[in-house]
Length: 418
Image 1 (cartoon, helix red, strand yellow):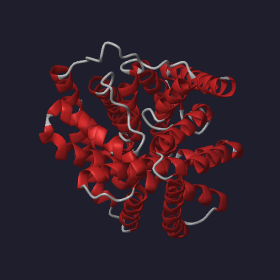
Image 2 (spheres, rainbow, N blue to C red):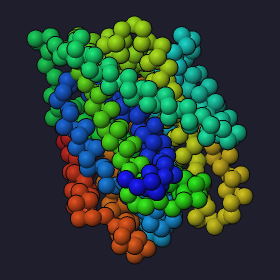
Image 3 (cartoon, rainbow, N blue to C red):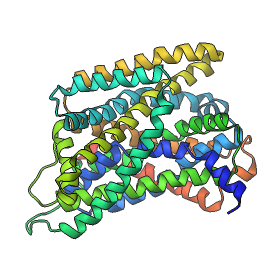
Image 4 (cartoon, rainbow, N blue to C red):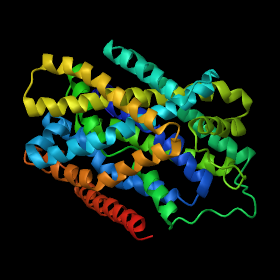
C-alpha cells in the first residue's frame, strides 16, 4: 500500500467509526444478547443475514456523498419530491421512539455504574440535558475522541469475554431447556425486532452521507472510493462481529440457566454486566460498566445530534434557507426533539422491552422502502459510472430489497392472521 493511500485512509477515517459507535448500542447490547439468552444459537442466521443484506444500502451513503458532494437527503429531493417526503415521514414517525430507546438503555447503565437509584425517567432527563449542553457548546468533537477509544476497549473486552466464556463456562444449558418456537406471533415479532437495528437502521445511510461530507470539509481532502470503503467496512464488519459476540455471551451465560431476560431497564443493565463478570471475574465490573455506559452514551449523543440535523436539512431544502438560519434552527430543534423523546419516555414509563421492540420493529418495516430508494438513488445520472456499484453489489442490493420485503410481509401476515 502506497504512502499516499495510507495518508488518504487516515484523512478518510471517521464516518465509519462514528457509525460503529452508534451501531454498538441497542441492536448489540440489548437485542443480540436477548437473542442468545432466549433462543441460544438458533437466531445466528438472522443476525448474519441482516448484516449481509443491509450492507449495500448503508454503503451507498458514503458512496453517494463522495460521488456527488451532497448528502443523500438532498439526493432524495433531486430524485423525486415523493422520495423526499417518504424519508421525512419515516424519520418523523420513528425518531422519537428511536431516540427514547437508546436513551433508556443509557439510563439503565448509568444506574449500574453510579449506584444512584433514581427513576429511569429522571436518569433519561439528566442524560438528555447533558447531551444537549454538550452539543450546544460544540464540545462533541472533543468527546468523540475519548468515545472511540472506549468503544475499542468495549469491543476488545467483548471478544475476550466471549473466549473466556467458552473456556470457563461453555455452552451447557439445562437438559430440559428448549428454545421458544420462532415461527409464532411472539417469535416472529422478536425476529423482526432483532433484525430491525441489525447492525443499525437503514436511515443511517443518510446520516453517514452527512458525516462523510463533514469529514471531507474538515480535512479539505476528497478521498478515493477505496479509502471511503475501507473506513465504512472497518466500522461495518466490526459491528457485525461484535453482534455475534453479544449473542454468544447471552447464549452461554443465560440460555437454559433458568434466568429470564429482564423486562425493566434496571434489570437489563444488571444482567448485561453479569454476562461479563461471569466470564471474566468480578474485577471486570467497573471496566465493563464504564465502557458500556460510555458506548451507549456515545450512541445517545450521536442520535441526539443527528435527528435535529436531519430535520434541519428537511426544512432547509423546503425553505432554501442560508447557513446562519440553519445554525440557529438547529439549536431549537436540538431542544425540541429531546423534549419530545423525554415526553414519550414519561408516557411509557419503564416499559423497557416494549419501547425497544417498538423502535426496532418500526425501523424494520420502513426498511424495504428506504432500501429501494437508496438503490435507485445510487444509479441516478449525477452519480458517475466509476462510483456506481459493481455487479456483485448491484445484485446483493436487489437481493436485499427482496429479503427485507419478504420478512416485512411475513411479519404483517403473522400479526394479522395469527
